Every structure is written in structure tokens, then in C-alpha cells.
Length: 236
Image 1 (cartoon, rainbow, N blue to C red):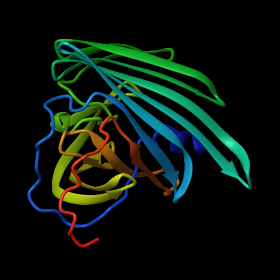
Image 2 (cartoon, rainbow, N blue to C red):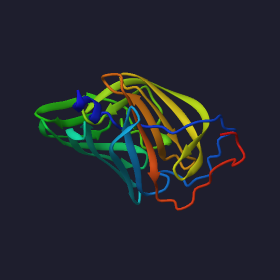
Image 3 (cartoon, one colour):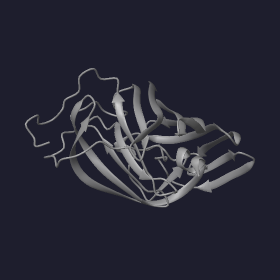
Image 4 (cartoon, rainbow, N blue to C red):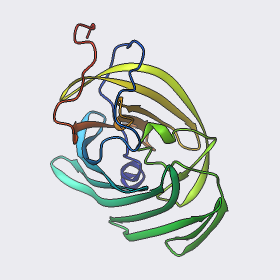
């Protein structure tokens, strides 16, 4: 149970009030490069951190998502997981994905790469070979790639059918202040709620664990020292 919860703990949320028109006044793709640090909680209790690091070299964008999870019961760690996921883009085109997870079951790795719309590679001992015109993985790190009817579940190296709904603008209360965001709901073979800042970068997410628990992630710090916080006189 803990494995399925932790492997899907790319989520979280601190909300809420309706916002006005969303101001997309941040930098262009891929938004602000650098490290975004999130706290991950399960049913309101902290279980770890997730750090999303964006690097850009010309048209190449590399996104590394590192999760460190430790679930405790009665003060004792009953599950521990360390995971590193890597999305690589050429322009806004997703070209390769890699995963490495270490948990009580051992080390699990996988890597797939794109040629046209064909993806090939391995996930553990299994081969992967499938068609997908996908430019978004289950890390969902940036608003601009939240399109299409499929995305790749990076830990499995498999295409998943989804619908992505733009729910409009929302003001979130984050540790660094009130932030104007865009809210998307992902439904289908992957289900998650995600929120992005005006630069398009992920700031919060939420989903259900396999046992029905509420798994959330929310931004603790990012590369911007002082972000615009929207209408300060909005109702909390």
C-alpha cells in the first residue's frame, strides 16, 4: 500500500478563492529555471519533500523531479522511498523520459526515448514500444504542455488516456503569500488536480492515494525571491 501511495505522491494543494482574469505575465517557456521545493502530505501529515529542478541549455530543457518520502506510524518509519524522474524536452517537444526508484522492493529503473511519435526503451526488465504524440508526462511540471488526450506515466513508461480540463483562475495561499494560479483537472487513467503560477510553473497539486487518502504537495520555495501575489485585498 505504501508503495503505491508514495510513487504517486506528486501532488498537493493550499487554496482557495476565485480569482479574476489570469495574468500570464511571467517569462516564456519553460518559465523560471531553478529549483522548486514542495512539501508532500498524506491526510494533512507531512511525509516528505519533492524538488523539481529546471535547467535550460538553448532549446534543450531538462526537468528533474526528486522525491524523498518517509511514512511514519507511531513515530516509526514504516516506508521509505527515494525517486528521481527526468523529463527531457527539445523546444516544447518531449523527447525522453527516465525513472529511478529505490524503496523496500529494491531499485527500479526505466528509460524511454522518442523517434517521431514512437517511444521505445525499457521499464525494469520489460520492453516498451508504443505510439504516442505526447508532450507531457505525469510530472505535469508546466502549464504549456497540459494539452492532448494522452500523457506518459513516467514511472511505468506507458501512455495513458486522459482528459485535461482548464478550470480557470484561482488564488492560492502558499507559504510565500497569495499567488494567482491557473487550475487544471486531469481525469481518466491518471487523475490529478494541478495549479500553475503566471510563469506556467507548478505550485500545487492534489490526488487520491490508492487507499483513498488525500495526497497533496504545495510549494515551499522557488527560484523567485518575490513573486507577484495578485490582488492583496481579495477575500481570504
